[in-house]
Length: 123
Length: 345
Image: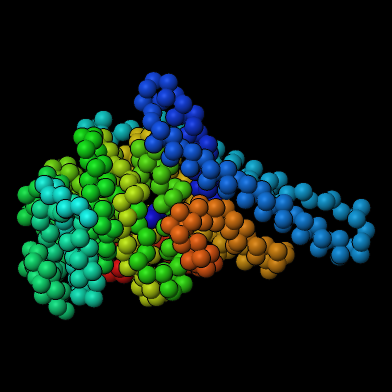
């Protein structure tokens, strides 16, 4: 089974960040002799996925901005100075909001962890 | 072809309720493994079709509880009384395995810290919109999310359709508890709470039959969404103290609530009252979803199938949102727990 709804919201950003942290983590393991070529292969693949996703999000945002700009340009009959041209819809709005939301959600979880006792230890 | 290995110290459990149409393929794939199990136990959960006869024709042991156990977990627990081997594997009666599936999965248990291991899941048939949506969902989740979870040593679920366990640890954790609709998630999180490890082995592939129509899919989505919420309720205190899993679960839960609200309420309202352009919100992340999906599909030489199936993912995701919100509303607000296990593959 699968938990929740994969491929949505802050989950995407969360896993991209984790994937981008993998080389740093693996480099630390390499220093202490706990890494392998196989592990680096997995890390590389996930970094490729993460960079590909970031690139596609940026590309989609840019494409949408061009579409919206063209639509507005036609609506104001060619008066290009009458509105602010968008450069990237996603990068300027939802990406920042997602990262901010993710940060707040994770902060709440870590705070809760300090407040709520571990039932295993309580025994 | 090399001789099949023996000495697996493994019992395979195949819970089956009216599985006459799919069981033969499952048992055939078990017989064709490069590492053969010591015993295969088919639990005929009081089927009304010829499930038991089909199982017997393959020479496996058939167990029949005195009455229907009511769930897959119940049938598996019944069979645990008959398991004598060090390792136990659970396979759904509609699931076939790649010929080296068992051998690859068993290697994960060479590490004594590992209590359970699961493999890559891909739908066997990819025809209807539901099967296609699930195919993309699995390609995405099993090629992007799950390897990352495994890297940080916390796969969120050891999938019930194809997982192997250390029998003693499985018993110590109460086997498959029936307190939630997602016994595999319950068991996986229980392992972590008792400091046991779980691994995801992407090379070990299984092929379940996924729901082909809305009637079956709705049963599965209802069970999975309620199961997820029920497990959060049961485990939340322990979850907070399990590194990585706590953040992975809370992020999934957040998206289950707020992405569902966005798809079902926010985007339709914005598109009606502000601009129809907001309808693009349903598809805005299509290229992002496509990246890991197409990389994995290319690796499996299934690029055409993946491209043709991609639109179905967005249909399934929107329908899934309805079931998630419904589950949250019923379990948390109305306090009406889903307790009846409805089979939907």
